Length: 121
Image (cartoon, rainbow, N blue to C red; front, side, top):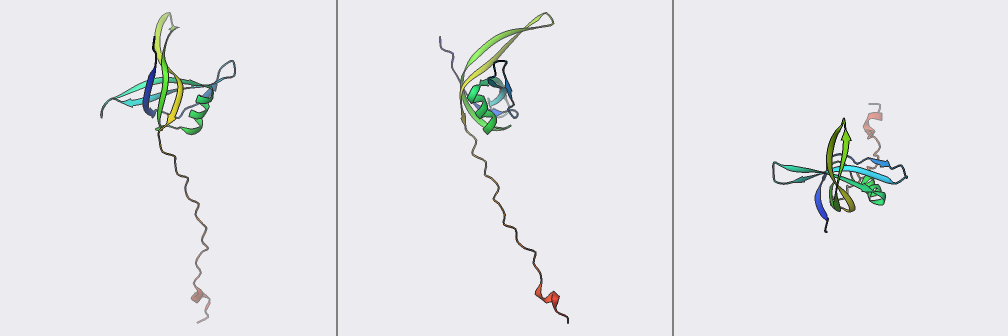
């Protein structure tokens, strides 16, 4: 069986890293993929380890990324009701947004003093 997903989209919000009980870093995030001009698909994703750390370190809300992963389906139970979930387990990411330019440091210019203002006349 083949279970491979390739997605290109933008992060819906800033990624936040958490730690598993075993001490492994994990990030759950959502990627918005435009289907057409008016409609978008919102895809739940989860990344672990170094991939999660890179995502948190270099991406923020609105960053465009490409990811490769696999679909993972699971069920949970809440108030006696089974809930079905699907998410993409991320294997690798690629940063597609251009690097942000750091603001250029401006050189402090001394205040202009009019030499004529010191004249007694």
